[in-house]
Amino acid sequence: MADSTTAGRTVLVVLDTPDRELRSPARELLTIARDLGEVIAVALTEPSAQTVAELGAYGVRQLLVTDLLGDEADSHLTPVAAEALVAAVTTTAADVVLLSSSFVNREIGARLAYAVGAGLILDASAVSVGEHGVVGDKRVFAGTWDITCAVTTPLAVVTVRANAVVASPAPEAVETEVDHLEVRPSDSATSAVLVSRTEHAPADGGSGRPALAEAAYVVAGGRGTLGDFGPVEDLADALGAAVGATRDAVDEGWVTHDAQIGQTGVTIAPRVYIGAGISGAPHHRGGMQASSVIIAVNNDPDSPIFEIADFGVVGDLADVLPQAAQAIRAHKG
Figure 1: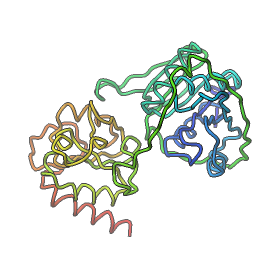
Figure 2 (figure 1 turned 120 degrees about the vertical axis):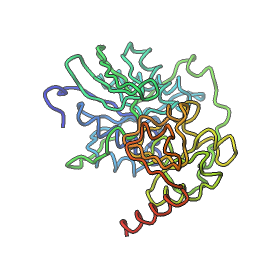
Figure 3 (figure 1 turned 90 degrees about the vertical axis):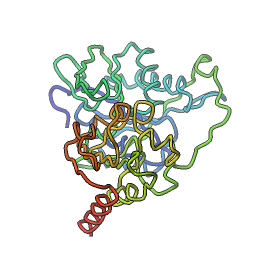
């Protein structure tokens, strides 16, 4: 609930997949937004009935849908999406815009901030309102520094990392009103045309595991698996976790590049990270060091990963991980 510090603020929350459902990052954004001011959700495509119903459960009274005009207008083009959000900001007189922290959204957020002269914070791990305006906490330099940034411009644009908060519905559900806003993108925004778009199958082969960048729990394997990711995947399935890997494991062909965590792979910040057979090279640490809790399993007690681990198990992952999976399933059962 907004207090005296946040009263009167309008917060736009940009939905990534409104035509299907509210994904976990969107629910987290809505939870954060309720503490910042009055929440308005924004969809760049027509929402599903399920999305509208879920928005009501999260206390959102208004959903603004941008209707793009023109044959070449496509919300998958970042310049077009940014101009649609400019129109939404102008129409609602918004004070804050929140987006999930994906590669595409970081570009959209930067274009939006430049177009309207807003302050921009990327990859925030927490968002609040302070004395100087909207405040974002971040971890930088591969998770080695924690910093706090304040936006002093009238409008703040913030992309927020997954797992920043635990998503929670509003105390009372409301009726969500759907409004439409016509937007005609400029010739500049549509100068690049989307010729084709192919949606690839999930890298996990349709196992139903969460996306690596968004997962609250991640189990990762490295060279110490010797190519056998069975124990890693079994523990991940017991936890409902995503499966990650080091660059070495990817280079060996044991897993696909989509699972690579590190400076040239996916940067993650889950609530719990479990690294099995991973030494803790700087490249990998740069992609996972912002995890809330780090658990390391390695048969070498001198592995560098133990230096940053909250909990460490010295042992063979082929013995440790199956026992952990068994205990978790027994606890759930």
